[in-house]
Image 1: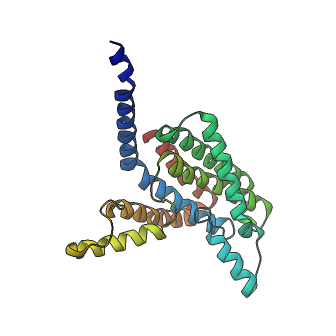
Image 2 (image 1 turned 60 degrees about the vertical axis):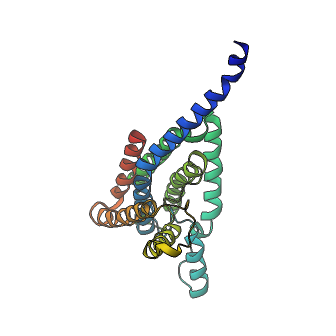
Image 3 (image 1 turned 90 degrees about the horizontal axis):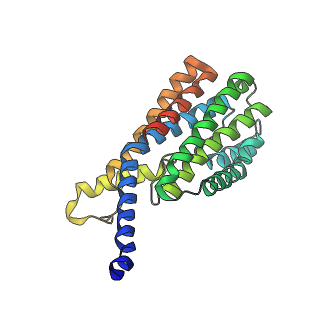
Length: 243
């Protein structure tokens, strides 16, 4: 009996590993397209209502700030400060994840909750202060910071709760994977990509969802103005419910 008792942790660890793999597979099936849709909406809406700030494709702000510095025009410190602001947001979300005491896929729930709460607070702040009326003002900068913080929750979710997951917010990698995977499918006898690389459908789902998010956001900004931020907040609530 003592030998059986000593050996019992091994099957338990195997069971835990299997449960974790099953949970990650479930997340893979449900969340990525929804998260990409949210990211596309947040990026487009932020760019057109908060003074040309990328809230999901954060490094793009460096290019925008550099273009202004070279060609002239209205310089925005928010574009240049986007990187340190995003870094602080990531560190804050990491602290929240650590304080939750959870690891792996179980972190999905609290981080999705944080993303929803930040987007909800952002919507309330924007409806009250209307930063789109002064896209270079303090209110617009504060709103952009909140939007980037919501995206920081999404990036942290992928890195901490879902190791190895491909991005739901920056589409260059997904576009690259989609094209190269397609080329390999067209030449099955001489494939160049590893067999365990990201499947084509995963990249396509993220890419198409992000594009749809931009399209929906374009219509929402035209019809709803500042209330367009209600769409990513609503989708974040759905993601929190279905994950």
